[in-house]
Length: 201
Image 1 (spheres, one colour):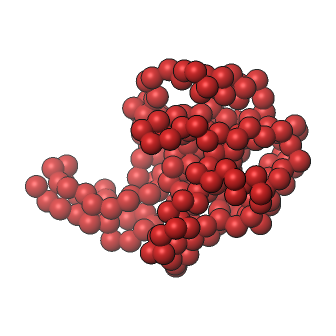
Image 2: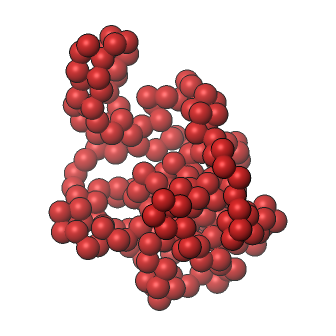
Image 3: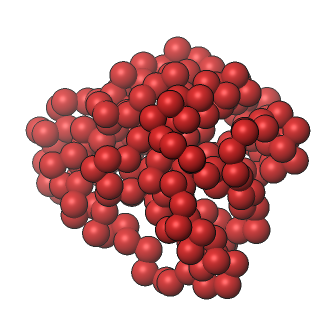
């Protein structure tokens, strides 16, 4: 079997020429790699376990609202110097601009906030809209946050593949997704990172 390492962060068109029996190493973080099979991917990544307890309650609130997921990732992005140098963190200004953009296109939005640092969010982001703060899914239960995100009608994502997938797994054709234009603190080319209908700020 062959071995192919992703040569750079943006889409690598030569992927079409690799043999079927090979190993691939990399992030491959572009919808262009799988856009033609989007319905298959969403089917394969269906959350099979039903939401229970507090998560079922949150899902019911999401279903009854003009729900917007807002994801703030801090954790290792703040605490680990090497990770911080690569990724950085999204600024409060980014989130405020994203909240304004959502409010411009959606009446009466209700924000469902997901974060590993809810205390920071409450101190630094104070939307003038209803907010539910979701911080009970930890460790092995963290995937439930992605499940809940995917149920929302719109998304404000962090520079994190976790919330990227939470937004992408939402199959609504009319969804609104706002993403940070500055995904990395370094100069990686992110031109292929976002689907063409996502908004970058």
